[in-house]
Length: 282
Image 1 (spheres, helix red, strand yellow):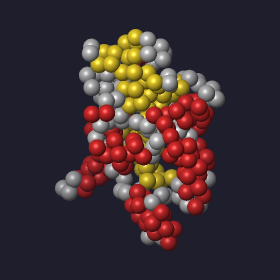
Image 2: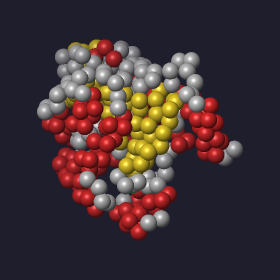
Image 3: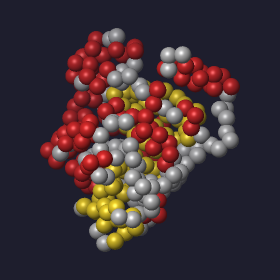
C-alpha cells in the first residue's frame, strides 16, 4: 500500500490520505482496511441503485460469477478469455499505472498484466467486498503488483492525472451516475492516457437477428444503448466505438485530451460535433 499511498485521496474532500495502522485517515475522515483492502466509501453517500447492486454481489454470487459469465459467453457464441484478451490489447496502455474500475472477480487482470508487459502496476476498485476478495486471490499469481480498493466509481479516491491507462468493462449501464463516473475516469487519467469503457448493449445489426432477440430475452441489459451523451467530449480525443462479444457489448476507446491539443483530423472534429448535436437533439 505504501507504493500507491501518495496518490490516494479522500473521495469526499479530495484531501491526501495517511496510513495509521489498519486505518486510512484525512482530517476527520476514517477508512478501515479490511482483509488488506482499503474501504474508501461511505454507505450513506452511495446512490440507491448502487447499494442495490452491491447487495446482489455477495459471497455466494461472487463464487458463481465467473462460471455464469463463461456459460453466457458460450451460449452467445463466444469464448470469454479470448474476448477479454482482445479488450486488453485494444487498450494498449503504456508502461506505468493502470486502473481497472469495477474489477469484479479480477477476470481481466491476467490479460491487463500481459498488456502491461509484466511491468508497472495495477489498481482495481469495486463496490463489492466479496468480489474484491475473489480478485485478491487471482492477483496473487500476477507478475505485477496489484492493489485492490473498495470504492465508488462515481467518487474515485485518487489524485488528478494519476494513471497511464484506465479500463472499465461491465457495470456502467447501472451506475448511479454514468456521466459522473466517466468524468472521474477521465479526471484520474494522465493527459494522452487511453481509456476503455464497455458494457452490455447490442449493435443495431445484432438487435435485428434471431440471436440478438434471444440475447435480449436472456439478459434485458443487452438492450441498453451506448451512453454517448455521458462522454465529456471537451476533455477527450481520438474517440472510437468498437464492439465485443459478437456485437453484444459496446466498447468506447478514447484518450484524455492533452493540454492545448486538437483532434488529429479536422474531419474527426466535425464528426464528434455532429454526434453531440444529434444526441442533444439539436
